[in-house]
Figure (spheres, protein in one colour):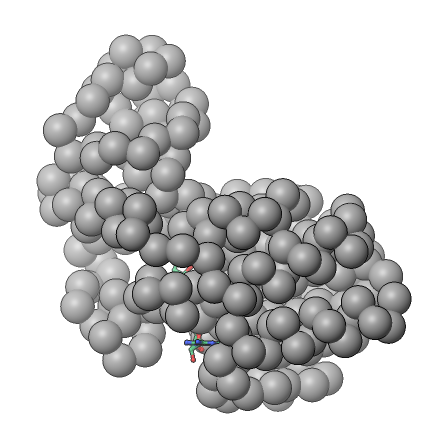
Length: 230
Ligand code: APR
């Protein structure tokens, strides 16, 4: 059974990583146009760096929760028949032990050189404009996909969705494309579809089944079901 899991900010919420669109979410306190577009970066790189440097620093203080651990356990069971596609830029899936993770929106702990396009693992701040370890130019930006930019790994993700038997979306509001369209793509290709989310999302009606509750409870239960059925 080939499984594609799509995760969003809700999967990391119980770890203490803020989501975007809930009360107290990141987009409540910041305007998207000020911190998450190429135009914002061109206009005021220091503001954008402050936003991402703070988020990167906050990662040091959080831990994976039972949802991340559940997905890592599922990978141990299914092997390469499971792929986690995440919109999250944290590294909590990896820290829980998942290895097959595609970060379609990039990663906080990575920097992208605007000069040589190299992607480098980066744990420190970027606000002081350090030189790129590859080309030496002071052109490093956060390696996150901003609004108006093309997500990473799309060819591979579409291929995986086309051959999936089961597609599961966890903790995502389903308002940001292209991820919001994955359920339709997978369903058209014949996959069963399941949504695990705290509340009903904009795309809930597109799923064969939707379960409501915190990811830290829903995911381990669902993983138990898959493990005992396969
Ligand atoms: N368990 C399960 N779901 C939860 C939990 C939880 N503990 N807490 C919140 N949620 C749900 C919310 O109800 C909401 O539907 O997670 C979803 C989070 O939605 P968003 O904040 O919109 O996050 P996400 O869907 O990941 O956003 C997509 O938008 O701004 C961009 O690039 C950013 O990757 C992000 C993208």
